[in-house]
Amino acid sequence: MTTATCPECDADVVIPADAMENELISCAECGAELEIISLNPVELDLAPEVEEDWGE
Image (cartoon, rainbow, N blue to C red; front, side, top):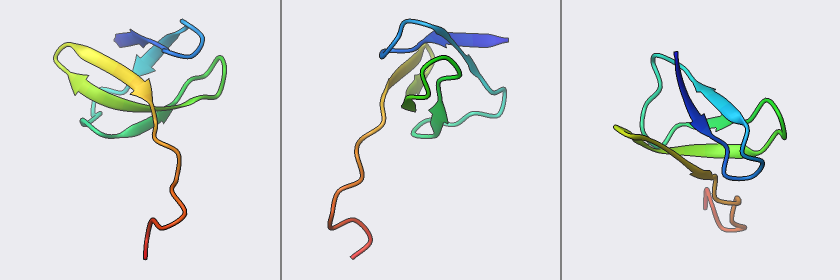
């Protein structure tokens, strides 16, 4: 089982075995949306906020 530290609340976040870079996951402790920046080593960052012009 792979885990990483939530950048928002410092809780351990379980990384799914089939996770991919740039995938969005949620922290079970604080509910923060996180982006997997890197898998080797595992690195998480807060997911970017949805911009108003996304999808246009």
